Length: 531
Ligand code: SIN
Image (cartoon, rainbow, N blue to C red; front, side):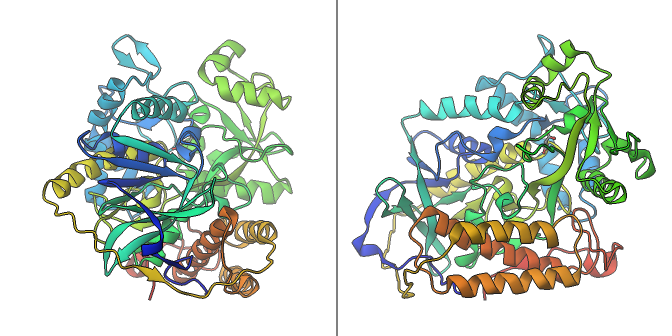
């Protein structure tokens, strides 16, 4: 691998600097909510490589899991999360998640978020896969957008929070094992700037773009994990990648999610011959854990020689569907699919990365002053397979906890910006087909590191990544696409290494050559850290 400690050659003394109390990278729910959980007396910057409203969180449809119903409790939510996580959840983290859910939802209501309601006092609750109770609160089928829109509105009104759009975080600056800030590229001027702070929160989301078909936006290229790894931070559970079972399969669109909430409202999965198949795979039928449903769909696609299966919600009325799932109804109709009359063609696509930067429950990583939150982080709440609608919740609960922690640090800090940091790797400019390699990488990962894996395929993928590295050589990255490719190659390599290492099947990691779960040997997390 050619990557040095930093992806760029620089000397900090030559670079323009801005100073903040806290820096947050990423503008999804985890990033903006964390910013709002830090008192207004502190100066914060949110850096985002696109505009503030572009994130994976904005696309989240289904909702947020929280035990509000009379017959429900945090204990039930805990039990379901642990069950879906297939033996690898961190019990302490899950306990905090389920017990602190309601108070953070209260907070969202105060910020003006409008969830669907049963009555003026009662939020509507629906169900999704592997939940034993109705506990998903939602805003139609655009929950992420409703939450993010409201939080962004509040953030924009705060004088202490500066939003830095189209600023790409290249690397974190460190001295020893201590975080000092971020080295970033301003995309308009293409110049480097150093954002200096003792506290950096990484909320950059996941890395779904290493796959061809993903529900994630183009920006999900694993940049936060890349910069964390280069700085010597521990990454964990990278082999566990969740494939959402029901993503629209249409020649013009293979990334539009058909929310699990549609199955929560009774939709049935049928193979291309019209036969319902989930009862043959799991007692929870269409609402089995996601990894189970995705593998079942995959198996039916292979059996019937088809690239998709059908989702059938035709037994509901047009009125109901237009009201409950307005975005899905309208989008499908745009492709000529009237979901009140037609089956929806769907196939699994990459959706969520369970692994990420290893943190404790306060978002602390193995580097002092560097925190992580949301999909970029891994504190063990998802284990080997995330329970539906726990991800927006994760951003809230642990964003709040980082807020608590950071306040303590800021109260007792001594400003001490010792900044003699430089890097020289002699990167050189050369012509490389960046877009071509990106596409080949996505295809490779989809084929060999997807829903089903085995040693031969993983070894082949590993060799191919080595050949990509040879092709790019000691590339001097200058464009965002070049930096993204560096991060995508790095994370893909680590995902493959972890997938090869885990010689068993568990949750979302299924090895056809080791198709059993082996608790004795593998009921443990795999860490990746730069030597
Ligand atoms: C969905 O609406 O199906 C996605 C919910 C999630 O990923 O938690």
